[in-house]
Length: 208
Image (tube, rainbow, N blue to C red; front, top):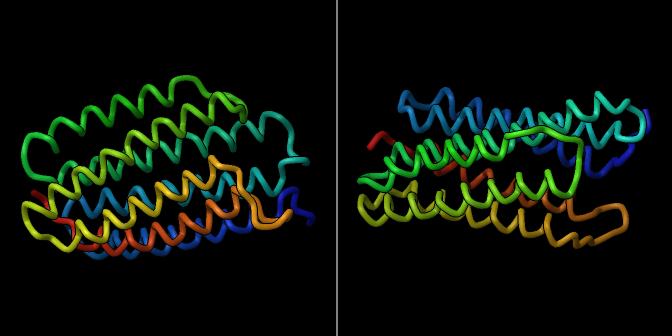
């Protein structure tokens, strides 16, 4: 079977495999709710990566309705995944900030998911803006956790958040290192690195 966009599809599927393995390991590692939410986030993103890989693999073959369903799964999965990360961070962060950011994150997810559409610059930009908001608040929570409790989780998670933010910047920049390896492919590879750091930190999360 000939793939429509081979490198993008393959790197998406590799990301999905990593997320599935790490999410499963997280789910079985602890009974603490933040860790369970962290695992759920990984598994949700794995679903989005599978849908994204299938979209890019069959982009020039599938009918419009199938492509729309796959794209909506990607958008919804990405936003919900980062929403779950924020919820886990809020549950483990001490003080009022953790409590107030949780409903704020839910509101951001709701706004982003209003109306699903075919792949378009406008729809994707809305998704990326929401993810950027959720991702920018997560390091704040983790830094507070690190400073207040000295937890090693904060260091790993802060590093993962920064690498993931860098991955999003790569995707938005549209840079490429080869004509067959574009910004989307680089984005997937960088996300794989970021999720390893997030996994290591997620293992250490605890209820506040």
